[in-house]
Structures are given as C-alpha cells and as structure tokens.
Image (tube, rainbow, N blue to C red; front, side, top):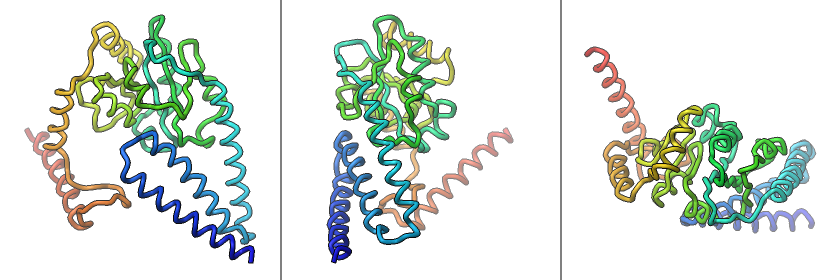
Amino acid sequence: MVLGKNLKFLNFLSEIYEIFTKILKNTNQRELESGFIQVKGVLRNYMIYLKYKFTRKNLKYLKEIKRRSKKDKKLFKYYENLTIEPDLSKNYIYIPLHYQPEATTSPLAGIFAYQQLLVQMLSYLLPDNYYLYVKEHPGSTALFRDKKFYEEISLSNVQLISRSFNTYKLIENSIAVATCTGRAGWEALFRGKPVLLFGTIYYQYANGVFRIRNLEDCRNALNKILNKNVKPTLKDMKIFLKALELTSIEGYNWLFFESSLSEDQNIENLSKAIIDRIRLILQKNKN
C-alpha cells in the first residue's frame, strides 16, 4: 500500500518535472530559468530517491545524494551570510560566476577555469572607489565550490551578491561585465556594456569585447573602459549579428538539441564545413 502511494506520488512529480521542462524551453527570463533549474534538481533527486527507495543495492547511492544535498545547503547558507544588498549607484564591474564543471570554463576558459584568478586580477587592477560585484551561479553545487573558494575572493573591493538577486539589474547598472564565456557577456553587449572576456566563445570578435589572457591585457582593457569610455553600440551588435549569419553553419553538435534539421542533413552540413576549412588551410599553405 505504501509502495503504491509512493509510485503515485512519483508519477505526480514526473508530471511537474515535464511542465517545468516545457516552461524552460519557452521562457526568455533568465532569473525564472535559474529558479526552475534549482527546483528541477530537487525534484530529480527526490524522484531518484523514491524510485530506488526499496532497492538495497542502491542504498550507497542514496546516501551519497543525501550527503551532497546537506553539503550544498550548508555551503550556500555560508555564502549567503557573506552577501550584501548591492548599491547599484556605485561604480562596479559585474562578475556572474559560472556553473562548474562545464565546458564553458574547462576547457574554454583555460587557466581561468579557476575563477578566483580573474576576480583577484581585476581586484588588483581596479582603481579606488571601484568595486567588483560577484554573484554565484544559482545552480552551483558543493562539488566545485568550498569555503576556501569564497575566502579567496573576499577581497576589500569585492562584494558578494545573493544568488537570488536579479542579474539583469546588475548588468544594466554596471560599468562592464567580466566573464569566462558566459551568456551574461552576450546580454551585456546589447545593453551597451563592454565585456572583459577570459575565455573563448562565439561573441569574442564583437566590438566592446576585450579578450583577457594575462595581467597586461586586463590592465589595457580597464584603461579603455574606465578612462576612454569604450563601449559597444546597438549598431555594432546588429553588424556583428549579420556577420554571424553570413559565416555560420546550419547544424548542431549536441545529441539532444531539438532541430528541424534531419540527422543526415546535419552530418552532411558539418562534414562539408570541416572539409572546406581543411581545403582552405591546405591552399593557404601551398601559397
């Protein structure tokens, strides 16, 4: 009887999970998406628990889920106690931290996959009366975070912001956005905010993006942003979008990506693009 009730409740949770999935696919509101990502994680763990609750061989796995959940709660309670209500009238650069582990930082950010390095570099170079507002990714877990990480970025001109604070407000009121490869950088460009980019991503060639590989790159970028007021315009971004359209390949490289393109056509498009690129390189080498 108890098992039957649990199975019914499992079906109920599964339906909720599907509803949230549909909402995520159809919304453009990043904060809403972030909240649902957290809810999905909770529901997913609970469904796994119910599904394997009566299977002894999975007891070790269930204990690990429970242990990680407690660790996450403890760590992010510690983080939230370090946060402040941001003063949006101050001069600040916004740093939204990446979820990890993920390709957006490793390998795409190289050494800056250790995100404390970019925070420390900017902190060192910022002039007086300028701040860094650092916001943890709402989906982060204790798997790639610990108290030491937050201690290493708790510097005199760094202010930690609650994970629930509106990221758009932080972008709109910032002087610039610093990120490894994040979507916040792309969003910042359309709001006329320059981006300090610490990795490799498709929008790296847009006007207003400063690629940072070392201390000198960072120093030069800050000089242009703070002293010369260099920033992207909407016209710049329209031109960049057109350039993307003209040079992009119609295809996808993620198995679960939903597309109207057939699998065979996708393979053909990607193969042709790779072959054409190799031919171009060989031709240049001949000349």
